[in-house]
Image 1 (tube, rainbow, N blue to C red):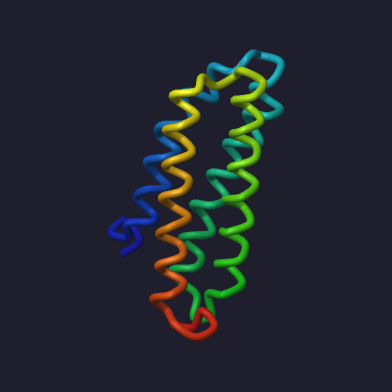
Image 2 (image 1 turned 90 degrees about the horizontal axis):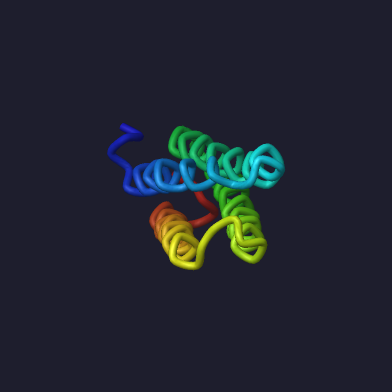
Length: 116
């Protein structure tokens, strides 16, 4: 079951942590940069669910990896624009990195070409 997957739970926890932070962005950015960050997090969660159901996971793994990198960049931008303080940025970055490490383990775990 998807809810038992560690990567799913870590991404879900990231969303629960980050959404309230993003909701406190300045009004002018809440529906621009903030919305983009939130959409990316939801997309990654959906892609994890999709990969869990697929026989050939390699393309979805690639899409998750790209989306995680995009998320890293947007969160850093939000920090540099001072929408996120340094401590919260560090927490979010660590959570993103943890999902990335889990993705790497999942990729290795399914073996050759993302089959399995």
